[in-house]
Amino acid sequence: MSERVATLLEHRYRAITRAYPVHYRADRGDEIVGTLIAAASEGQRWPGVRESLALVVHGLRCRAGADTRRRAAQTWAAGLRLSALALLAYLAADWAARGLTQVGDISSGPAPVRFELPAFAAGLAATAAILLVARGWLLAGIAATSAGLAAAALAVGHPRLAQGPEPGGVLGSQWWGWLIVGASLAACLALRRRTPAQSRPVAWLLAIPVLAVIPLTGFEHELYWTAIVACLVWAAVDARVGIAACGLVLARATDEAATATDLAASGRLYANLDYAWWAITFATVAVALLAVASIGARRQARL
Image (tube, rainbow, N blue to C red; front, top):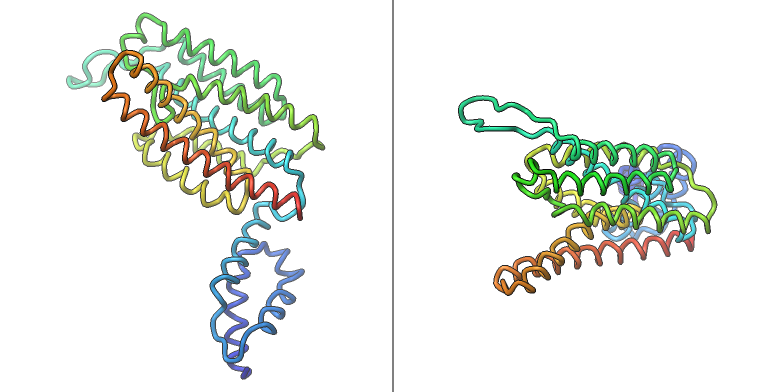
């Protein structure tokens, strides 16, 4: 291989290795590039597709902290914790917004805003649960989640709120959202007792406010599916993301399945088919997320 071609190939390999953190490139960058050039075929000008993809994925894993050995139970516990935080962020924003409802016809001008304590209390309980779970106080987080579920039940039964639409959005009726949060925290608590203490995922917590904004944008369905697809792709880099996103999908899948069951019991079979189809779709996405996350957790445990 001529010196000119070797220099060109080296520059292109170094461009790909920018996927790695700066400190990793400083320690091992020359070694990685030198090994790749030594293994290159005569006259090769471009890096191979498979090795380029492998370099990018491994570099992103280094940035995400998924390149070190971690027991599978630790990965699942961290993913379940993130799942609970993501659901709680959505529930907090959605229920707090429902606590401020417009009254009257807005076509003639701005409608007055009414404060509904039960719905707002559900949002506050979800916010408190976020702070508790972020601190690692899982039992207290489960208690706050239970309080939020109770407040949400009171809000739906409130005589004035009952005249409006049932709480919904991209998570359906959201009853399953509260229950999945509680189940995720309980499973995380059980796994944490079997594994060493984990550091708080400060970097990942920065993404939680983004999920809280989704129900307030008016484009929640589009943003929801964009986030799910992005999580499915990123789960190949960090298994914790796939586990976390699975909670958002399961909340919708269980709600669709419950609605389909109720419609079938009432004899409305035609309407039931639409809900059943969506339940199967969401369940399939959840299985795909769990499959990718499970493979990633086992891979990281073998590092």
